[in-house]
Amino acid sequence: MRVLVISDIHANLAAFEAVLEDAKGEWDVIWFLGDLVGYGPDPNECVEVLRSLDHFSLSGNHDWAYLGRLDLATFNEDARRAIGWTQEVITEDNREYIDSLESLDEVAGFTLAHASPRHPVWEYILEVSTAAANFEYFEGQVCLVGHTHVPIIYSQESEEVSAYTPTYDLVLDLRNSHRMIINPGSVGQPRDSDPRASYALLDLDKMEWQHCRVPYPIAETQARMRKHRLPKRLIIRLDYGW
Ligand code: ZN
Image (cartoon, rainbow, N blue to C red; front, side, top):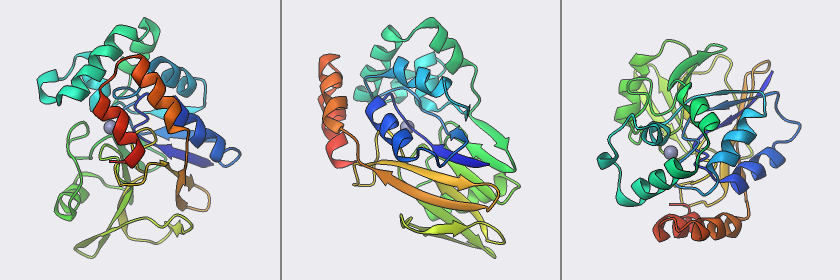
């Protein structure tokens, strides 16, 4: 079985469609690590496209905020405005779908968490020390996380944890390798100074992992964000990937 591993679509349909097109024929099932909505202009469309495909899905902190499970005061003003707009436009059926999702689970021996296995909704694994602490909170070989919007591999070798920035043409052999926490990056709002949509392919039979990037029509997403009067800063950042 081959898996398309994606995270943080954030209601960016053009980016989501570009990933699906780029990965066409390379996967049998999607594992989505959460944050379907928030920031972007196409929440209903993204939920509906995901639901139409064979998939497993988690919910993220923006999904929780949209559902009213988190205090919006903990979000910055731009994120808050985008969540408020999302609450106005999303259909009841799509709301129920998002409400049904968990933020941490295990699939085919992999631990999947939106943010981290220790704090599945909130914690940002941006430092080696945070990653090191999180290796105590899952039992298998590999944990997949999203949330930071930055593709990265943390590898635990004996007691040492190291961070690696992914190389895109490299196929990683997960067999007999170290324990890892891997982030596939964000589909809809990358933050590693590369504006292209980020995703990964996982072959469960060969146990091979590959990070991938694909450009998408950013201007299309930005035009819809302007039409819905979403915050300017959220529109501009898509050009730069921050
Ligand atoms: Zn996110």
